[in-house]
Length: 238
Image (cartoon, rainbow, N blue to C red; front, side, top):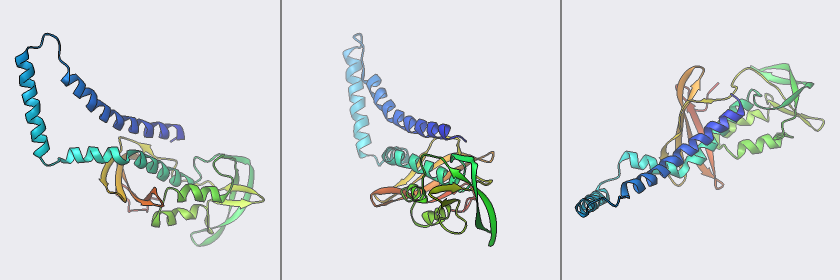
């Protein structure tokens, strides 16, 4: 899936949740408006009904729907950013979504299934990355714990996808994830001052499954600590 569509869907999700809040306000305005032909008796009845409704809402325990809406408003933007971060990281593992010059290539030895294998790497021309430090920063700004450890293999170690040589950055491209295709709206399910959990439907090889991301607050930033897609085990999507 191309990068532009991914960003569009994420933005649309944010707009949709904003529209929910705006819709509530608009609804209140419409409900509260009266025409000049409305009788005093009708107005008084409406006022009494509104007062009773307000009193009932004050004493009633909050419902699941209300709680979910409040949580969604609180961390939606952070959740969307982390969905995109997971998507980017999964693509980096295979070299997808990174601009390269395929006329400029170099051979590096990598560990593949425990054996040394010579593979062709292409010079990176993507403005986001000029060194492995750039790749490291992008990932460390969005991931924590075991998930960050998993993605470290993208830029360091014997099987790293990125390599530096002669002042240039090179990348190996392989079969695998080419990007997520979102199939619905994001949903917040849990939230606290230090963590939250969010989910979004994705098209996973023709099957719509739910991607769930758990996030923690670290160094005053929200970072994904784990994720699952459908039946896949946490942090083990291949």
